[in-house]
Length: 238
Length: 386
Image 1 (cartoon, rainbow over the protein chains, first blue to last red):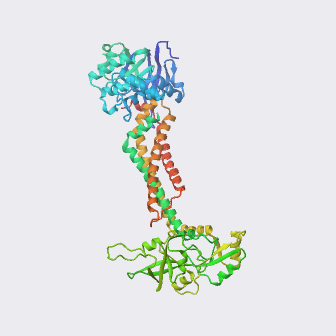
Image 2 (cartoon, one colour):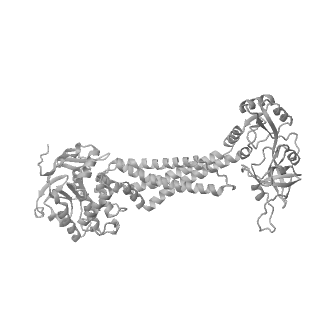
Image 3 (tube, chains in turn blue, orange):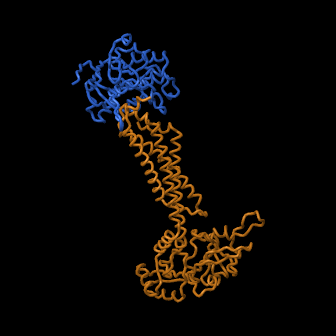
């Protein structure tokens, strides 16, 4: 049984996951142990193919693990039905992706309103809350702009607004700054610290970008499907 | 979320237009080919439709369709008149006679010879003159299409348009003088030949001499008698076949269906239209879904259920189907209006749009179902792939 306290956001114990094809089995997680607290900005770093994306996919409830246990705010998503897991994800988890993944046919407001619509909020209210959130992340003047008309940094701000608008407890980010220049990447991380960590939210960021390591409260180093080290400062990584 | 689905669809304009085009093309092919097929079939029985007064058509039992006349002995008319339940019976001549045109060429005409006394089975609509004018010497009534088309006189110069036949014009039918005394509108026939109405006795004079010339006997059933019973009595007493107009239309249509390549040819065209629709719409929509996979994955990761995603896809296919069917059927209906009273056989009853809508709905539903598999198998993990 995973030990977790009231302050524990994520607790994973002996987590394993393998990808199976017809002829091969490729282990991605080989017994991951990690605990992340509420209000923490936790970064997962490590070489390509070490299992970072698999781990956040399991944490976010979009991938089923093989063995071990993983609880999110005390809930074991593995034991939920697909529908329950989808609903839980929609209410409690926000996503930010490397390539922003905004729907190109929708305006920024419409993109940001999607999580609210999925949670049954009326369209007019969803639009109003999306507009407010866009203003909060600094692009209140781009409410009716299409994603293709925005810079990379602006698109990532829209993506952050979309991840925050329904007030989730956990935000999962996959390489949020790797497509951005240094200054914009720094702005985005500042935004994360200011906006995303409010209200004891938990942030899990997968990144290769060493320029942003210092924004983390703790850094989990992954290698070959295991979290090999957890440090509090980038200087401890070497 | 349905607005999101529609915006996603309309945002990909190239694919949206391709899908609408595919459905519209299918709807148009199905509407047009089916309407032309029905138009042709209805033309085969056009003459029966126009002949409304008699209850029974009496003929040689070997007759296979309305244009397949097998002449009867004149005495058969008297036999039929003697059958109990027959109120009246009149002779009808139906045959082909060559008309010599002013430029020396010949045109085969469909000549209808009506009972001299009653003129029963005359043309349904008279445009010029009256049916009674047939009693004038050498009088004939010509159908509108024939008068303005194949029987029209050449213009004054080779380049000038033809001059339609008018009342008073002279025709030469099988070396016999005939005077146009009326112009009528009749239902076009399968052969599209000019139709010339005259009296039975004059038709006997116009037609090449044969031992027997009576094509049909048209009979009216006395009130209180069953058509079926009287037809049976006629068959028993005269050894002839007797059918109601509806039965005779059925026999004629079945003959054309069975003995011509028309149903197969139109069936192939309609089948190809369906396949083209499935291919274009299916492939384009599938490609649209593949393009949308990443965004569907994001929606799934953010909490959209499979049911919601499928409803969104259904809505998208429904919109494509509705717009495409509307355009295709619209063009089909427009053709129907333009083709009215023209050479093009086009008959568009209400059942055809219903069939078209059902067919295009089937295509879009097949397309949606094919995409559903893809969506159900969609792993939201796709969103973390670059």
